[in-house]
Image (cartoon, rainbow, N blue to C red; front, side):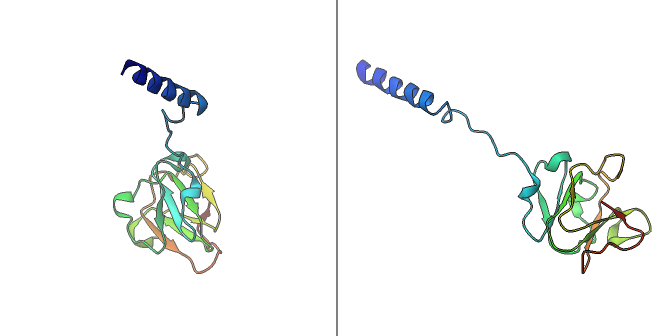
Length: 136
């Protein structure tokens, strides 16, 4: 019995050495803007596209529990979107336009000062930003 246990421990130790310890520890995948599905706009609650992408495909007059939470955004679609800091797509205050393929990992940076501000989003029919919109 002792010989069998010793042989098993030797085999496990050999496997750990041969695989570089991969059996013992796995790391979660890093968050990335590429986590945003095609033809969607995605927001993330934190900078640098973390922790997980929250995708949208249509106009949202109020983002619910995601309102005033976004710090990263990626437009993985083919048309521009407007990011509003008020409900119901209001343009009376600050609003940003993000064209297809554009992104920022930090909406709070001095150039934007828009971290934790997005409350509603609206999809445009093309990739042109309207006058009055700040462009990301």
